[in-house]
Image 1 (cartoon, rainbow, N blue to C red):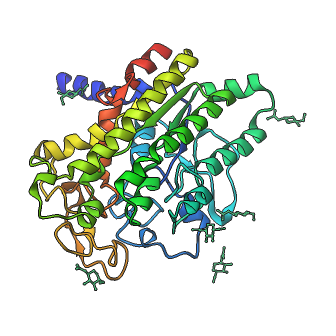
Image 2: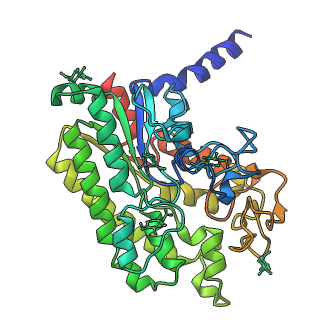
Image 3: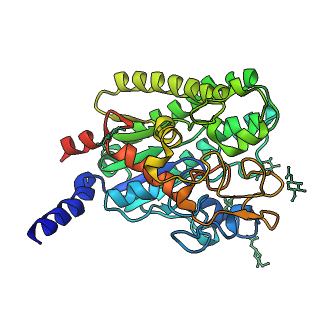
Length: 370
Ligand SMILES: *[C@@H]1O[C@H](CO)[C@@H](O)[C@H](O)[C@H]1NC(C)=O
Ligand SMILES: *[C@@H]1O[C@H](CO)[C@@H](O)[C@H](O)[C@H]1NC(C)=O
Ligand SMILES: *[C@@H]1O[C@H](CO)[C@@H](O)[C@H](O)[C@H]1NC(C)=O
Ligand SMILES: *[C@@H]1O[C@H](CO)[C@@H](O)[C@H](O)[C@H]1NC(C)=O
Ligand SMILES: *[C@@H]1O[C@H](CO)[C@@H](O)[C@H](O)[C@H]1NC(C)=O
Ligand SMILES: *[C@@H]1O[C@H](CO)[C@@H](O)[C@H](O)[C@H]1NC(C)=O
C-alpha cells in the first residue's frame, strides 16, 4: 500500500518537472491550430468542422484537425498550463493576454506569404493567414501588454514559443497541386528563411525559449501514399511502407532548418533555440507500431473515403462522402489521411518532452531554469 502510494506520487509529480514556463505562444498550421480557423470562419463548411472530428476527447468538433488533442495540448498539459487559447476568439474578437498562452496557428497556413506562393502557381484553398500575418497579430497583441523593451523581455522570458510546425503546407499545396519535386526543392531555402526571420523577430521582441519543429515524414502520410501510389516496390521502405523519396525531401528540409538554427544559436547564445524532431518522433511509430498500440494498418487513415490507404480527396473525413471510420482511433497513426490521431500526437509529444527528440533536450533546459 505504501509502495503503491509512493509510486503514485512519483507518477503525479513528473508532469510538474516542466512547470517553469508560464505560457505557451504558438505559431503554425493545422498541426497546432486550437481553433483560429474555426472561430474566424463561422460560416465556412470545411470538412474538419464536422463530426467525427473531436470525437475522442472533446466529443464534438472544436476546430482541431484530429479526433482529439494535438501535440501542443499535450505540451500544455505536461507543463501544468491550460490548453492554449486561439488568438481569434468567437465572432472574430481577438485575445489580449498571454496568461496561460495564446495560439496564432491557423489550419492551412504557409510559411511563405500566400501572394508570393500564388505568383509561383501554388494555391491555398483554406487560408491566407501565413506566418507573416501571424507575427503581425502577435506584435499587435504585444502592444497592449508592454510598452518598453525591458517590459516585453520580462513578459516573454517565461514563455515557451512553439514555432510550428510550419512550412508543411507550402510543400503540400505545391506537390499535391502537381508541381514536381525538383521544383518544390527550390522552395526549401525560402521556407527556411521565412521561419528563421520570424524567429529572429521574436528574439528581438524578447522571446528567450523557442521550440522549432521540423517536418513530418510525409512519405508515410496516406494523402501522399495515395497520390503517388506506384507498382515499383523499390520506392517503398520495406519496414514501414513509406515512400522513400518523400521522406528524403522532409529530411532535406529538416537538415537545412537545423543548420539555420545552429546559426541563430551562435548569434544569440543566451536564447534557448530547441529543435523538435517531429520526423523521427513520428517515424518510430511506423517502425515499431506494436510497441505503441497501433494495431490497425499503419499507412491507412482511420477516417476517410476508402481505398488502399482509406484516403480519397473527393470523400474526405468529415464530409458526407466519407464512408469508412475505424472503431478505435487509438489503433491508428493517421486520423484523416493528412493529420494524425490523438494517440499518435500523444506519443510524439511524449518523445519530445522526455528529451529523446529535442535538441538540446527540452527537459534539461527547464531544470536548469528552475
Ligand atoms: C476579423 O475582422 C477584421 C476587421 O473586421 C477583418 O479585417 C479580418 O479580416 C477578420 N479576420 C478574419 C480572420 O476573419
Ligand atoms: C454567418 O451566418 C449567419 C446566419 O446565416 C449570419 O447571421 C452571420 O452574419 C454570418 N457570419 C459571417 C461572419 O458571415
Ligand atoms: C486569399 O487571397 C486571395 C486574393 O486576395 C483571394 O482571392 C482568396 O480568396 C483568398 N483565399 C482564402 C482562402 O481566403
Ligand atoms: C503603455 O503606455 C500607455 C501610455 O503611457 C499606458 O497608458 C499603458 O498603460 C501602457 N501599457 C502597458 C501595458 O504598460
Ligand atoms: C472517391 O470518392 C468519390 C466520391 O464519393 C467517388 O465517386 C470515387 O469513386 C472515389 N474514388 C475511389 C478511387 O474510390
Ligand atoms: C528514449 O527512447 C529509448 C528507445 O527508443 C527508450 O528506451 C527510452 O526510454 C527513451 N527515453 C526516455 C527518457 O523515455
